[in-house]
Length: 356
Image (tube, rainbow, N blue to C red; front, side, top):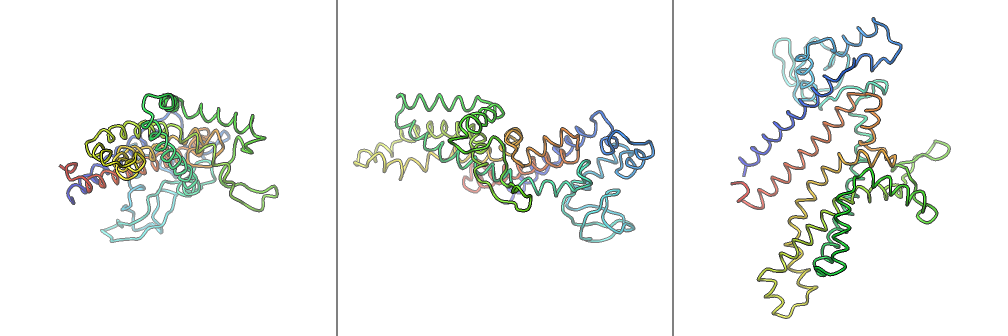
């Protein structure tokens, strides 16, 4: 088991290194001058030269790449002559482990650098302020999808090939085919505008709102309803289909026929025997969908004005704030990889055949 875990961790680290490399090359080789993006339209040649020198934009691509890896690595290397652990002009805290010659090996939190557009605000701070809202939205959506999807899947299996089964399958197919941004616009218009008098829901709004005087921040849970429903539509459709097919397969097993022969009611058979064994594919789907939701929340958050990481990515794209874009994409990729490795390890622990 230990070898299996180490092997999975090794693969994940290689995958993460590949993601970091692609992100660096993709945004570094983009047309345009990062120094001009930071300074705006009224820059001078001297100002551009100073910014390039400060942030290392004048260095060869290979040097920039190595320093980018050094910033992201929890164990990094720094000059002993520096007062702080720095990447050019950016300072961050760390704990020195040992010194070799003029180089100090330090232990630190991965440094995602500073925003171009937010007055030098640290990208980690930007992500720290928005990621919790995205996680709340993703968890709410996946909980809604699981409970409602399992319920609809059971109903569809019990009424196989009947009218209600066909209706559920049609709705599931429609839910999987509709793009999230279209569903978001449709739901915001219908329930937030046309039916606002009855639903009391807003077209846009985030988890935290400020009162009219700007002095108090309060939680507005009703703003979570529409984005959570829209984000949960596609996983709900997948879960209901998986649950239906899995339950039909389980109900056809010999031990279920034995339970029926003993006179057990269908309700008891499903609750005590069939349901647990039917949930395996659902658990597999949920683990993958939760990580995917962090990326899929981009359009949903932007349309509903939900102040999460997805909306922050769109805003950063509009202002060409490259450090925020790179840091946000890397954060989502890291969470996705971490969830996958945890699920793989759990599967390996539950089923030894998988380790082989």
